[in-house]
Image (cartoon, rainbow, N blue to C red; front, side, top):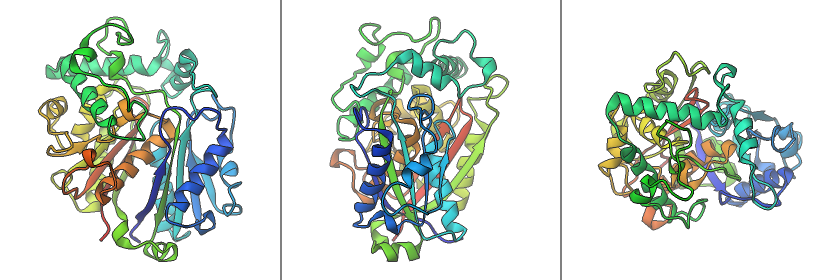
Length: 401
């Protein structure tokens, strides 16, 4: 198969896009991503666009047609994808696979979400209902906010099985808020969270579901934002005028899906996630020991722990301890979620998977802020999920040189 490279990555600041319309978001994402390597969109052969709440919150379908309104993208093969919170990762794989099939040499993956109104406000109950549509219908009754409830159950199961404490898991969020303060693209850049404040039930920090351990600071953000990525073959890089030394290789990838219903399967050892990650390492010819940069899907703090186990940096049940011991720090064994993660950088759902891969590419290229730069970054892993640990997209990245 042809090697595939990440030629460019761009994103908005996550948080609020205010009055930007969906057509404006897509055009800006495409044009800014292409112009970052001094190309225009006519250089793109194929494209994929992903979003999750575009129908329910934005009342807009056929995003491929909107993307095709960008000058240079008309009459190109463009598709829309949706795989819940794994949509961004799926968009990247869709583009990469088209390039490997020979459908072109330059591809564009765009993901976005517009979850807030023109004033930056959000309707929490509506968003809870909308996101709940990505769960099994049998697991929705009695849950006002479906996914916080489902992951509160996962959190309790993780704590009960491994003897992990609320404080252990809160330490993940604290580390991510610390990273976000140095990331100019992070939604919660100006917020400081200490372990004491993350544990104290006061102000905005409260238990989300009565009788379960999940608290506000254990949760990811409601975010607007977009992310765009140019992928290319070697021929595509030459056409773009981008040197291989300025790129990152998509060395390995994997995608797998478990049944949507959480009940009856082991979400603490997610079969599909482990299979997807194993496939990514196998294709890359690498092992977890080779990786010292990672972005994992911490939609809730417990997933920061489980994600650390999925990428192979901690054995099952020891993911939270990996963070508590400082091994996930920028200067630790493997810098994990140095961007701030979904908890503090933000979670514009359709953009999330692209942003995870993009940040890791920036890490390998030395393009992140100095305070967040992992020393001697040599290889990166990403783990992007959708639903209650249902759909999983995993990648392994290496320097292209």
